[in-house]
Image (cartoon, rainbow, N blue to C red; front, side, top):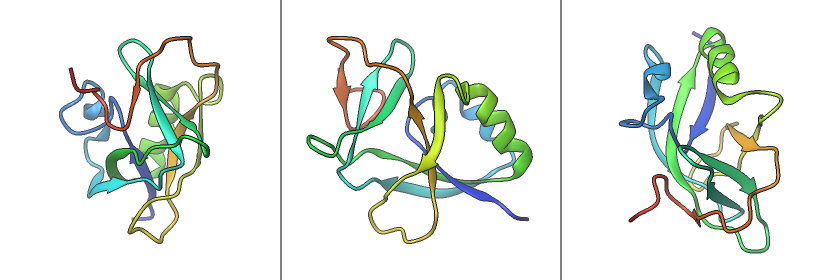
Length: 120
């Protein structure tokens, strides 16, 4: 089965509210990005943005998804209006990998960190 490798960092991760969307797809393991990004809390979900100046190593999971699941994930993530699917740089992973990046301005004072949900 041809698949696309997706890095998930929020509601699609194991144990989170959107993980059911990953049913039937291949869990490839945990992963950490290069310190070039930042997660922001946007209410019930996070948003990932590039931050080459003050970036963090974001913790998440890798999933191999088929084309049908990818289309469903794009719809769930609001592509292309809210999120865009773009390449992401990971530590200890050399293959192609994509992630969903938030496309709007981050609200002032939004919480930030490297792992979702943010520690209390």
